[in-house]
Image 1 (cartoon, rainbow, N blue to C red):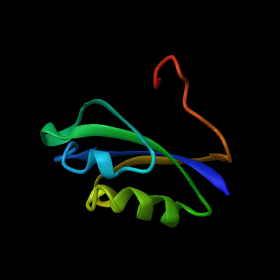
Image 2 (tube, rainbow, N blue to C red):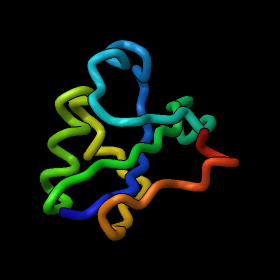
Image 3 (cartoon, rainbow, N blue to C red):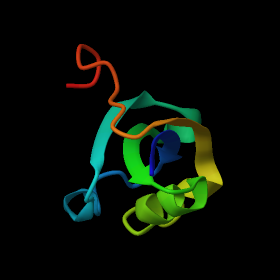
Length: 82
């Protein structure tokens, strides 16, 4: 198991927010007035991580900013992502 740090652009960020089983952050505005989203996901593979995201945000993988693989249990800097 690994922890993936992902980011994507989302045009409808609040529609399914309560359905997320993972921590998400809105970090600003990106291309074409899309909200910039970040999340960390525990999964075996990048594909599994994106499947979790897309269960809530169906088009996330079409607007990827980045994905970073980390050791299991990694968390983003709490001073920036409380």
